[in-house]
Length: 128
Image (tube, rainbow, N blue to C red; front, side, top):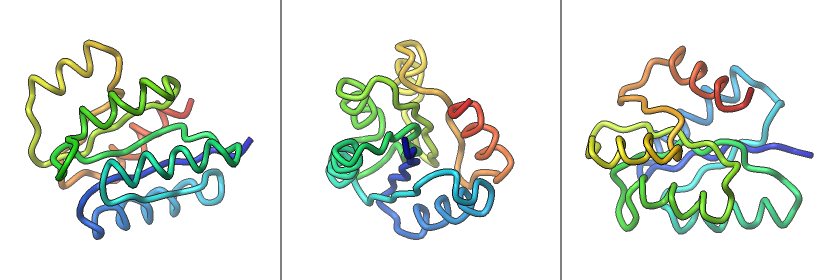
């Protein structure tokens, strides 16, 4: 079965940067998808699932228009509980992140600007 990593951020430069870093490290091991908001991301997850492709990790910003990252991850994991979540953020409500960690919905939090090594280590822990 093909596996995918989905990057979600309202800034296109961020999702493209994440995708580029992931692809340069993991090469063709995964399919890499990007979305600029939670609604678009849910559509991509559903489309991939319909095509038999498993999203294994979502890397999402916390502060986005519409649904914030924690709300988005909660919705995703209601429908797809096996998907791991990494939040990459410059602005986050620590109480929300703590709740997500406590509920087991959040694998890692990385601060913007992230360090490439930390990103890869977080993804490695999610995919192992």
